[in-house]
Length: 456
Image 1 (cartoon, one colour):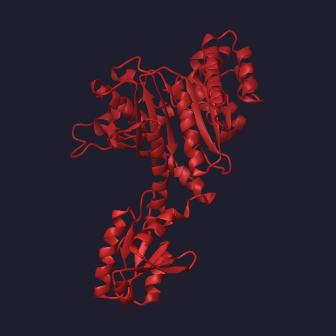
Image 2 (cartoon, helix red, strand yellow):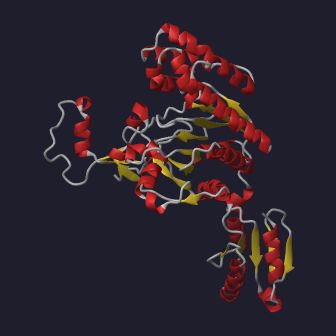
Image 3 (cartoon, one colour):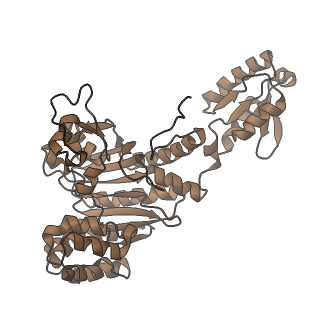
């Protein structure tokens, strides 16, 4: 008996409707990236593990998909007695490569390798899949696309301002109401100093980054497990749960972090960004969230996370400032800031809110009915003219009953059907039927083109 085919958990197939909708998302984001001056690049699906390991923190390293070396990869390798006793040396002996976890670390590697070819500051966008060995659940997949935009080679906070404006532009075009949350890793470092645990900054950020998932009690318990004292936790709790407007929270942080130059610098950076956005007249729901940590270790300044206002789902965009990510690849001191759109979660949000335009349901704008050989040749000739005007069209391949041909156009949400019979050929025209209204008219080819192009 043949084995029933399947795909790995956390991955998905996409049919024509799904792909049309996904391309709508990608095209919208790509168009905005270009409007803001970003250029496209691509990097390989797999990277050397030496490139990936140690860049995402302990939690991230656990989620890397590792690729076994090809051939006899066990030759000369000392096998561990038990799988859980495998050492990093054993892992590196059988696996030298891994699937990329995100697009930022490969981008840093790209910048270092191609530094002599790049004009700084360098603005790039990248739309490619990434892989994480996470537990699949609603809105969380093991294979998913990221749509990244980064600027490297500039310390200016105007880059953060432009990225926040870009985020707002994308979601306005998609019709999704969002909450843009921001924080600054310098503020978190200042808080760690304030509670007397500066050496615990990584443990603190990893724990409080989970507050939306496990709640305040869960964060408190994890902080205790990670070695923070009860007194430190008691001092930290009211800070990460600050209430009030963003301006009020900034004022409160200024007072709390008065003795931390690092923390105060983070407060001032956020204040400058928000003041500039306000001066530009950007209308967006932006709020300071002191619990926002973005668990990845490479962030050093502003951090950003975007949530959908009307759907309960994880973050749909995130990012931040990283001051020395390229340093681990031998190019220290190069500052960068970037964001990443989660296309798969954005898809789920658009689906739940029924926000996909009807035009994404069909790639074909006009289907020509097949009445026979003579009529088909005339249809093919006219289709050349329509395609030269950017109109997607197709001819039903078989001389079937009209009901069957119309049924295909209806099922595929094709907006127009063109009918060419003996009368139409004699007059050099075609009958165009609007499938939404049922209206049909005898039109010249230029008139048909204008009618089709008028419907978006």
